[in-house]
Each structure stands twice: as C-alpha cells, then as structure tokens.
Image: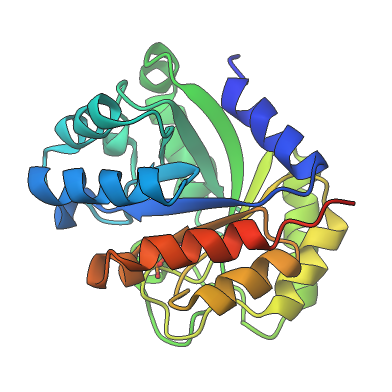
Length: 251
Ligand code: 1GP
C-alpha cells in the first residue's frame, strides 16, 4: 500500500514539527469560496486540506477536490463520514474506524461493504483510530454515529482507547470533539493520549482561537484541524497556521 504522505507525517513527528489542516465541508463551499480558501491557505503555508463531514448532502465532492488540486499543491486528505465520500481525485483517505464507540457499522461494517471500491480508488489509505470526545453538546458526529463519545474528563479511557487502536494496527489517532463543539478537547487529555502512543495524533473540534491550537500542539497534537471557525472567518487561517507552526521546538 502507498504510504507517501504517511511517511512524511511520521518524519515530521520525528522532527517535532506540527501541521495545520483546514477542514472543508463540501456542503458549505462553492467555487468562489474554494478559490479564496486556497489562496489564503497557500499564503499561510497550510499543510493539508481535509475534505468531508459527518453528513454531506451536496454532490459536488469530486468538483471541490479537483478545484483545490488545480489551484495548489497542498495535499487533500479525505475525512469521510461515510463510504459515499470517497473521491479518487484526493491524495489520501483517513480510513476511519470509530474506536471510541461501540457501533459495529462504524468499527468495521461499512469498511467491509466499501473495501473493493476503496481499494480501486488508488488513494493512499491511512488507517485511523477515530475517537469522538464529548464536546459539551451533541454534535453531528455524535448523533450520526449513534455511539457515546468519551466523556471529556475521562483521560484514562481516551488513553486506553488510543493504545488499543494503535496495537490493533491503526497508523493515526484522531481525537475529535466534533465540528462546532462547544468545548474543545483538554490539553490534559491530549497529553495523556500523546504520551501513550507513537503514532501521529490529529486533534480537532471546537478550536476557535490560535492560542488553543498552540496549546494543543504543546500538549502533543501533531496535526490541528479547524473547520467551523474558518468558515465563519477565513482570515483566521493565517493566525491559526502561524500558531501551529510556532509551536515547533527544535530538540
Ligand atoms: C471536526 O475536527 C473537525 O470533525 C473540526 O472541527 O469544525 O469545530 O473546527 P471544527
């Protein structure tokens, strides 16, 4: 299996370099806003675009990705809420298994059904242990997944879940408070999880301030994902990206 982007991620982690990913929900963009986002992202040295959502209604996923790819070299990584959100035009796919939940469909069921199609896509597949953490109110992901999130103050559960995911062979761990979460994940939980795994750690959900992104990186996040806050104010890309990249410590 292809591991080009993944190997780069691992190398970045080895060098203690942090990355910033802008999450694009295909339902919330059109050609003009994509072009504006790409321009801002290139100028701000954004590392990745994540594309997807727990519920995507529009049918222009392929076009969105083609437009991004035609306008910049920033890798596009699919962050799918369902197998219908697979596009061969992206660079890679977060192959998510919802390890924080106990819904067999999202642990393995949908993967079985879509496996031949996903394999045929030619995408780089990134096996990802996906952990939803309680973000203070129900989010689309917590509702759609039909699974309880990990309570925000139960860092030990998060730690053990991430460890189990990694030992089961998952190459990335994604801790997500859910898009638009009222309360983002605590640094305490991020630190506990990051200290217990070797895999790169993605953190997102409810991050609206650059300072929070910076603190998350200091606590051990390797990739910070921001969606909602940028949908509301695209100019935030610059500050967020700078905050994430400034947390790099050359050791
Ligand atoms: C959600 O982690 C992402 O799955 C990003 O969340 O939209 O709240 O930034 P926000």
